[in-house]
Image (cartoon, helix red, strand yellow):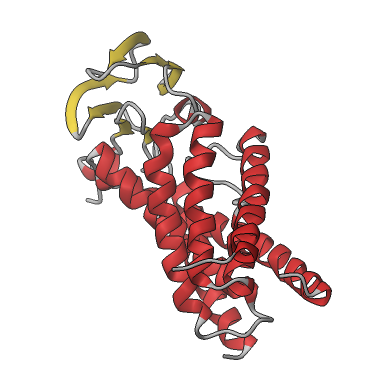
Length: 122
Length: 168
């Protein structure tokens, strides 16, 4: 098939996903709570307004040290070899969770838009 | 599949090159803090293999590289992701290969990169038990298309020039 055909398809996928990505990164409403799930089970909900530091152990061995500071949550220490979760930095909002695959840990800031009205008219 | 010595040597050579690229790339820190974003340099070899020695022998190179690469970099736990990503990438590339000419290796590469990201996300969603990791799909598609173009064009030039030498 012609180059034009492929360029068109690839460009379409690129533009659509770039639009979604830009939307995700520009619409980061700060959330107040973060949910920590391990292996798909919710194990802890943390209040982001309260500074804290704690360790979550993985039953299979391994751990993640989590810090809550200034309304954001981050992983500051982890037993995994790649440290992807630490590189993700502090998260205060947005839909994308912090993920630590080796320890099956997901930290997700709950967006306030779901349970609170954006605007009250009347 | 019966392989003669020439074919075995080609597979070994390509596997060695792929492993070096894989190990070198593992030393480069991730440029942006998104899990799963990487250049995928080793895919240059997989692409080249599909176009030069054919898809059946290319899969041997791919599997050897993933297994040996995981052992060398010490990330055996991540082998499942590499295998799932590599498998989906390979399948997608073989399908797209049927519709392109030898001058469109970059097209195969871009689709392969997208397949790789989808495979990785699927395993990640399965491992952590939440589908929320798919929220990374848009940014992974953007980076996958860009890195896929880069590795694809690299493979394109490699193929163009090595073909003149008539050794593969």
